[in-house]
Each structure stands twice: as structure tokens, then as C-alpha cells.
Image (cartoon, rainbow over all chains, first blue to last red; front, side):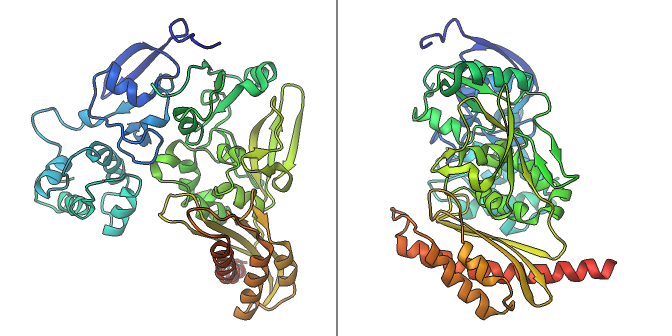
Length: 166
Length: 296
């Protein structure tokens, strides 16, 4: 039954960053490739493609998932949030602003996955300790190894009165 | 696009899943959380003809904690670790689940999927082996219950026939005189375990009444250190006892050597973890017994 990709397409109807999107896709299409290739949301980065690096982390019904470990067809009927949804494109989200302020990114490749991971983490745990933040970051790799500044950025974001705060 | 082409089905009823397995057997792979299967698809180490996605099956997300714990096939690890009732009633499972990958993995990953995948380094099989958990297995024309001891056959190989699937994973209720502990050594948190140890200890005063020790990462399937368990029964819960049990348990292992560690190193770690886990479990058993007494 090989080579049935064209005839075997299925419709994905999902809410992505608040917008309803409908596309015909092959079942083997990964969610990460769907977001990037079909919807043009290239902010979701693809690193290892087997669930180790965390760069492709998006929110699936509000919870962080590896989009390289899901099929696009599985998103049907669900809500996906990507890094593009964090800001309106003009003003940075306060967490992004904190990353900028604290130099929490160098090459920036891992940043979208880290931002999405932290978005869910800080929603569930609004005043974490530094160790808890470190734990939350354990599922995402930064090969520039800028972890200390990332921790500083989260703490800076949480400090009242600096930038936008919760 | 990484995986090789496959047919895709996402049935809504368990009968339809079982019918597909009956018709397609080995050609079909079940997709639950996908945290083990999808990497294998991406690397094309697995190239099934048919992927049966069970995430939309009615009733598969059930979590029943009334008489022991029964976990349905699409219950996420994250849901289990966040369920305060489960955390209270099955502390060993709650402790072990923290070691499964990272939060992003546990958001999708399922307990049942991890058991059915039967990776020798995975945490869930060690818990099931330690607590004498069972697996409910169904095919289109029969159902059976299998003990963890019989379920894990070899590396990533279980007692399942090609037309069968695990429809529930069960743990017995924990006794009020029992304490448990789970410990693991991995290169980095979230990596596969080099060695993991699960223990359950029931006390009668300051004596061990019952002991269970399961060790992961030292054999093709999670190992029960039965000689160390037998030694413990009737012994005093003192450090010397746990040191001796660790030595005996280590002697029962026959670990592999790989790039992460030698057989000797793994055996050493297994002994040390058993000794420590028993000490922790004994302390918790005492706390638990005290807590129950105080309330009655």
C-alpha cells in the first residue's frame, strides 16, 4: 500500500493561534512540517526531529508538546499555539522583551521552543524558584549554552515593575 | 516529511481498533502518545503499513482509582502525575513518572504505551514489575489479564499477539503498612535510565514483612531481585539489612556494557540504589503507618 500519499490525503481542521485553518495533508506529515510548510509559521524550529532538542515545542490545547512527534492529522479539532501567537508582530510579549533585555538568546534557534515551554510553565506556576525554572527548561537544548541568561530573563520577567509583568 | 508513507486510521470505537488489528496484525502499529513510535517512524526504523491512531477512541482516556488503579490506553503521563488522588494512593507511580522524559514528552506520552513498548530502560515497566501490576489485553474475540512478570518477554518484546492490544494497566491498592521508593541514575535528567530501582516494603513493627525490588536497565526486561526480597523478610529495618540486600540484589543482575557504562558500573549502581531505596521506603512505611494510626 505504498505511494498512496496523494489519494490518501485527509483534511486537518485546527485552530492555530486563534485562527481556524483547514488543509489537506498526507497522514505522515509531521505537525512541525505542517506548521512550517503549509501554514508558513516558520517560527517553530525543527532541530533533531526525534523529540530530544525541544526546538519545535508548541502548545497543543494549552500544553507543551514536541510538534515533531505528532502527526498533522492529529491536530484536527484541537488548538495549536506557536511562537507567532505570542506577540502582534509590533510589540514583543513581556517574556520576549525580558529575553531581549537579558541577552537570553544568541543564535535564537532554540528560543521559540523555550518561549512556548515557559508560557505554559509560568501560567501553571506563576512564581517559580530558580530551580523550578531550571527544571522547566530541562526539555529544551540551547547549543549556544546560554542557559544562565535564560534563567535571568525569566527572573527578570517575574520581577514586578520591569517590563510587562503578570 | 520524515516517516515513510503509511495508511492511517483513527477509529472511534475499540471494536474497530481490534478489527483492524485482526485484519492487519503485524502490518499495523498502534499510535497512542507517539513519544516512542514517532521517533522510530521519523528515523524510518519502523515502517508500518498501517498506523492505527487510538487517540479518538471513546473511553480509552479513563482513569479509575476506585479499587486499585486502572489506566486506559490514552491516559497521558502528565495527567497521572497531576492527579492528586493517584499521587496519594500510588506514590511509587507518581515518583517514577517524574523520571519519564520531560514535561513536553509526558504531555503526550501514555503510561500504557510505555508498558506496551517495553523499553528495558523505561520507568513504567519497572513500577509494574515492582507492584505486581497487571495488564488487560483484548483482541476481537478474546480478553485476558496478564501479570507484569509474564508480560515483559524481552527487549521491546511483550506477550502481546499481533491482533491484541493493551486496553488497561492496573496496579493493586497499596497497603497501609507499605512504603515505596523509586531511584534512578541517568546521564541527564530525562535521558533513559542507566539503572533504575523501584522498591516496596511492608513492615511489621521494626521487621520487614514483605519486600519487592525491581531493577530496570540491567536486563532485557525489568528484573525482580527475588533472592534479596526473600532475604529481607523477617529482617530488622536497619542499615546493615539494606546494605546486605543491596549486595544480594546486585549479584542477581547481569547488566549489559555499552557506551554509557560498563556492566560492573551498572551492577555497582544497582546495589547502591537498592540499598538507598529500601532505606527510603522503610522510612515512608513507618510514616504512613504512623499517619494511619493517628487518624484511627
